[in-house]
Length: 320
Image (cartoon, rainbow, N blue to C red; front, side):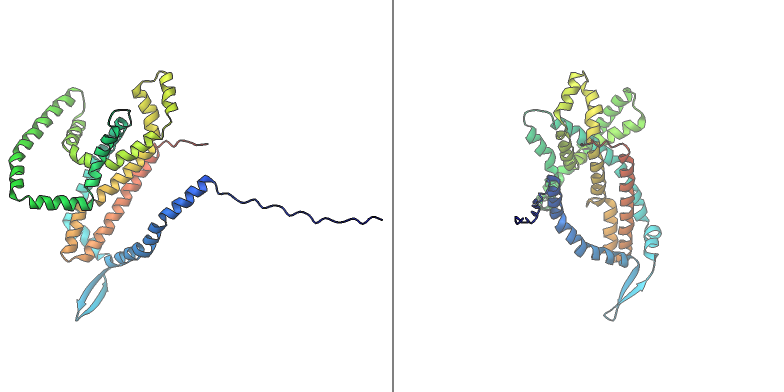
């Protein structure tokens, strides 16, 4: 009999798993956001928790001893009913926001569409429109303020002399715009909105730099083949904008809308923030903390409302 040698079954070779491109991108994104997440959990969360407690208590110092007294919603009622400036300023801020957001979004989208065209000096124009964002940083603001203070009274006198001329020019421009847009059949409310936007054009430009960049990135992500197909089909530029460009950039309209709301509510020139800071500096620190949390709730409510409204009209391109 022949001896049969039994061969051991071969072990399956384990293939080395190679992470896909999407997984590597996701992992890089998590690593990029990890310092912020850790800082938020370790630094900001304890501060926020203490701020919430601070709004429900009153702290007094007696004989070098801190006495903590629970007052419930008393600080919130004081902020709403005893501090009349807070509610009135908040309502005024909401009215200003309702004007600023559409004006900034329309202007930034208009400029982004223009800057996306092929023209000489396109990079320089992009830098010019983003320059106000750099100038508005804390370091640049302090430098400009220092130079303004060092300028002395001569600068102030020059500004006072030109104030009357600026007022006359503004009134002349307002009258011209009123007559032009009224002649075109626009309603009184629309004419007033356009005239106010033109008068505040410098502020709109200063606050549109980031939004313009976001819209530019969205416009450049649209495939040129889509526009070529529109040209072959005989679509006009107006039809191409409303049928192709506008739906494709609608997700970035939502992003820019949320960004503009947050930027409007948290800027140093915001009147509500000024009232909260002045209340804190006057010694009513508990009331100012209550104001801050109520202000945060209003901001979250407005952001959620705008996001819910815009999400119903946002077009998301399906990538198969």
